Image (cartoon, rainbow, N blue to C red; front, side, top):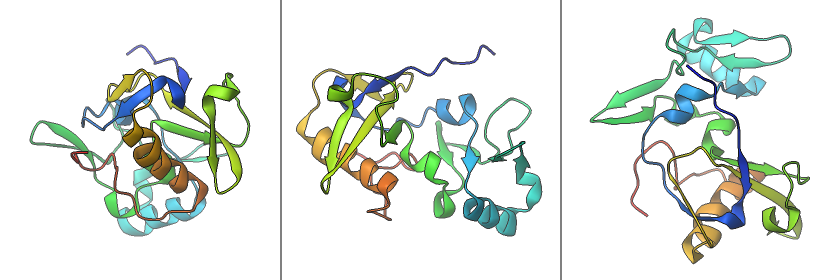
Length: 166
């Protein structure tokens, strides 16, 4: 398997996004866990579902490289951790930063409650449609993911865990 090169693009170059249940993100990327997330997984599923790196904790990957919680159901891939999905998974394919790490700050800038944040999207995600942002994307989908990342929202509706129609 050839590793993907992360190609983050500013959110203003994306027309829309919807999870299509392809499972690519769960096969192609490792998941870094915060300590409380790791603790919940270990207490529920056992330590063997995680692995420790030198400075980080991760969800263990299967021999084929996929996340150990990736489930295949009715032709789609879903996350088996819906009740305790790690933050990194909740906001994928979006990356919300306090500084414009991937360039084009004007295109990446997003204002939330007076805070300037910079939002990029993994250009490899097949659920993306490129172009001018639709109203629903900018004011619905993107806002929800930014609020999740900033801790201003706890409940996720536009999720990678179900194939919602929106």
